Length: 301
Length: 257
Image (cartoon, rainbow over all chains, first blue to last red; front, side, top):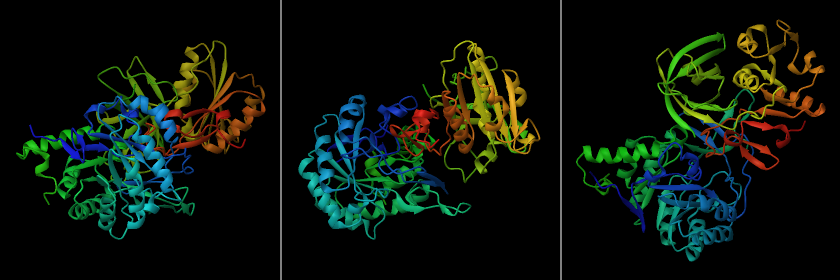
């Protein structure tokens, strides 16, 4: 049986498949439908310093091989998370990772510092790439300077594994990744959603309340694979790949492109147990192809 | 407890030009849904249908071990569902959501108002109300006589009052114009249908001081409270229709009624 354990910096994953932020709630929503312990890591919903109501409905539009969303980081804030959600999830036997977002550097820092105090949260994923909030979010992720400044500031207060989630809505994602690496990130994850739009032609208006939203699902996968491949060649830190992964074969593409682990996102909406099916599928595929370890295929292309 | 099961199609019946009834079963006893809950159906064989389709539980019967879905043929996904045949398999995530008010006391007169395919969850709920010793009164509306759904099924559980927009069956007009509403005496009202209709009934309920709940059908992706796409504004802020609904008391919503 092949070895499918992998590492993201100091973080050890029992298998390379995690669930992407905003697609798996806090894990508990899926507990009836999948054995949470069999997932490599669960990245919980984007958390901000202050509560956010998110954007107005409608927030979702189905598109060809994917969907657009403009949720806008609806969450109850980090204090609520620490007090009311953390106690319910801290004993889930996998890596529980918090996605941290903000609209100013001070907000990111304050939020990360609070999560740093939570013993059973071994890592954060810093979201500098949300396309659905007016200020902040992606604003930090689209320039090297902005990305560097927020990661440097968070690094000073956060001493566990720091993963930075990158935006694909940039000219050169490898340049941003290098800036983030230089600022002290332990890993990068990519891609967040691609900014898109859909129009209701009968009503002559956008389908989403704020007109634009983030595109996810298989539609974005080739773009994501290409970006993971480019970034993995550029940086020395581990890369976590995501974007439209629906199957075992999709995940293996990302691993071969250079990802040390992957995140499954939108696919959770269609099959709540897909993350574990993919993890088991990777193991089987490695066995079938006589690999001893997943590391033999990471970056193989 | 929620389940993702691959169920067996027992039959697909054409109800009228725009609707089919899918009767599902399983080798094992199907989990019993609460009336007003819904399922998420995985559509196979329709390349343009990416997400599951949320469909309310039309009926559930322990004896025949059947779960009924009354489906409006709206797009390619639902039209693909309509091509299912007996013994085909269908992946169904259920039961989801909260359901209608379960506290029904013997002797209570409960008004169940449905419009279009919104009548679907009221059949199973009407049966429940009757089983609790209540009296379900169905007020059902549609565009024309041909658009009315499952009337004979509803008649098994209670008095049915009809309206059609063209007057081809029942009283002419909208459900809120039906003369039966003048007699009142309802313990509470449960509504499912197009939003303007639900708002009109909610206005009647508020004016006559009768408790009222509505079943919403906001666009959703996961059905599990994870994607936060299906939110409705409430007095407590945005909440997921899939987990905190689909049924809401009108006093919890921020509708201008």
